[in-house]
Image (tube, rainbow, N blue to C red; front, side, top):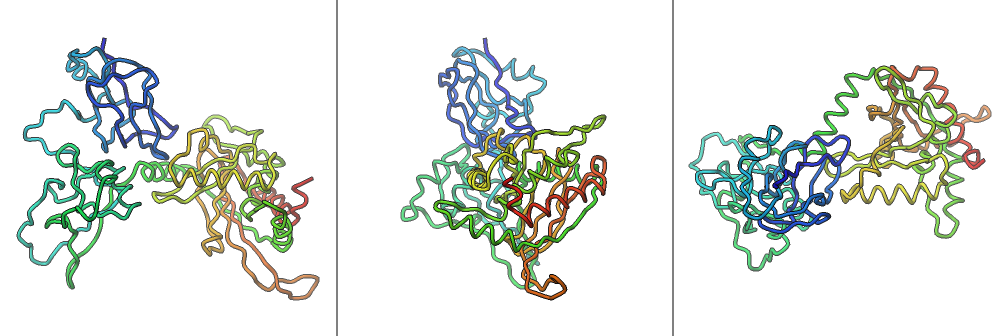
Length: 425
């Protein structure tokens, strides 16, 4: 009997998924555990294995298209089985039909992601340019998100790639097999027009799943959690000296960010009210310390988590952060590596930012914004001497953390950063 395979929820924040690639075609035999498709979530592109077995009778979401969680992803059953009644009777199936959809008079699906197409609004409307088979009715290139990303990475002009997908759509294999020497010159209607004096010129780019999730979660945080901010200045002289000594050891590399993570973690153990989250009718106080570290990626921010950070050394934290950051940029993070944070750190010091405020990252009650180290005159023992200072700002959810609680946490954090040896005790 035929069974529906639905778009899975592959992360706690996922509401919609995009099929980056199908590994099976209609008519193929599928066994339990077979790789069925690659699905792009709001945080990563993940492999989806089949939990059922049978013949793939229907694909509900075309490669490069997206649909909400629980939409019909595919249907498996016995070869030759009629599945139309199952599709028509499904109340949750909102996904567009891919393989069995009627071909006549239907315009192929348009994906407007990744590489932006430039739009020009001239003073006098020109006569329409001819459109090739790799463009949609509005003149935009038809290509899957995976193909666009691959083309961007390889520096391939999609306007010169011949699409082999449905309706001339450019897919991954077209970019993989692209040979510039054999490719035709881009045709009219594909090459973005250049703006001339007096013309309005802009670009548009479809919002990615990741950016949608960032917008939703941070908007909810900013507009539902009453934020307040506490800023403190740190004397980094001892931290700089300690880091220099540590990095002189063989095969050792510790960053100031690693020291910040450790200092935050041990300070949270002393101030559990900051290591907390708002649950509506209750406040959750976590005895474990899982520190989220904001990592910039092409489409926004990901927050991989250093678990039990208070029990790890500088070098352990550093190695873990580098590994997680690499996975985040390659979109290879697994849910276990981005879920469960109890506190978050956002560091923009490496970009020359001296001071900023950050939005609380749910479900945390606080986030620490870390600026860069600045050489400046300071007063020590009544004399003005050269010094190195760093400013940090704690953003707090006032429903959970009060001003005095946040200030006490910052004082403890300051003590650890200014006397790093205390973190080793």
